[in-house]
Image 1: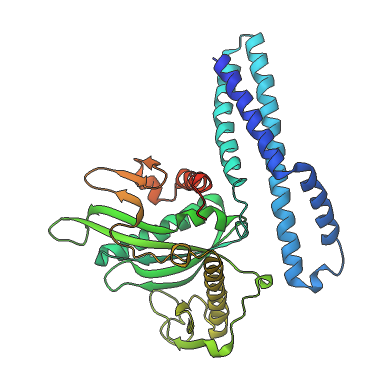
Image 2: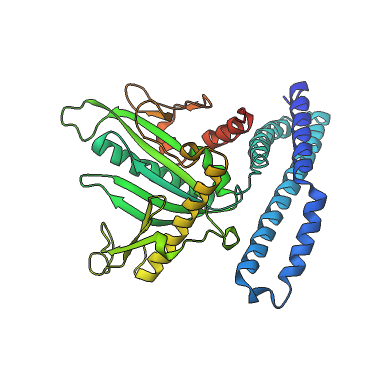
Length: 370
């Protein structure tokens, strides 16, 4: 154990971490942390709450990254010492422990390397995720609900805060659509590779003849906007409708016109929110979603890929990016990266990190269209 192959792997880990440290520019990161810490200590910082939140958020992200680099670097150095001691003393327990630690460090470094690939303009933002049922009737609505749960469970596993803004329930089962936020550094850059059509194949629980059913759902991911993004919406371009909330809820559901639907007339974008008891709160939340979608449109228009980037996904045959097959065999396969897993229950319970990491690497390696 801990032979030549171990030494080669440890050397490769060290080289990968060195590359990560260069990409992050650790020296510049420390300087920026000191500057931001000084700003945080200023007594008038919170006079401008938007700027204060930006400063504290940036400081938190940088400190977390620096701590992560420092921790991994220290563990790599400790691992080399553990290996040497194990070999010198012929201590099989220490060598076995070194092998286990090497495996752990491989996973940590690989995940961190993927994180350094998230350097797009909006990658560091929170994410707004929209789920929409497609072709497949009640099975599609149920599949959309399964995907929503999958992403919420993924966020929960990582300790990320989420907020569901709107859910439109289907008549028999599942949901027609839903929009929720994932509030974490780099949530948008991480989840953006999940945009597209997802396809489910299974024995339908809604078919009394037990036939196999294929259904589709679409995922759209956009970054949460900030005030500095300056997405202005003139009042004459906005139509506001209020209505009563629907679906499961508390005392305010179905009793007051608290739900809000906003329509941006020039683009036809419609968003709604009903999670708050107050109409004003729902309108504010709906505006956040609408501005995020308009920002996505603006970015897409600049790149001349409006349909592709805004998720103009038909959620039907021919345009799926990932298949979830529950019958006649168990397999989840991403059609872009070729990554697959036989643990379908785990994937649908939020174990999708490997799919996301493969997607980020695939996107980085894919040819950039002119």
